Image (cartoon, rainbow, N blue to C red):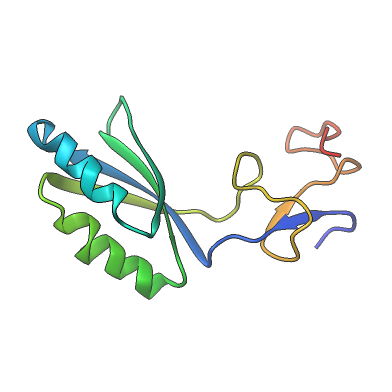
Length: 120
């Protein structure tokens, strides 16, 4: 790890799960998702998908079970597309001063564009 870097603790597995939903069942799907503990947040969105969610689990087996036996079993969910989060560098999930997980550049390190970071 780079000197001066700050890290954040995330769940062992965080995934973005996009869902295709039957339009007539959107309300039911939103209600069912709100009851699942592993779903940290979700939004109805425009574009290729109908819902985008953030799912956190202790390990890949738990994620598999949440996806296959909970999310995909909700009546009205037609299909899902999942992406495992490899790191979070900006946003509400970055917690400064935590002892593990995602590397966040310190103010003395260049950002991805080679410019000094404004993180203090």
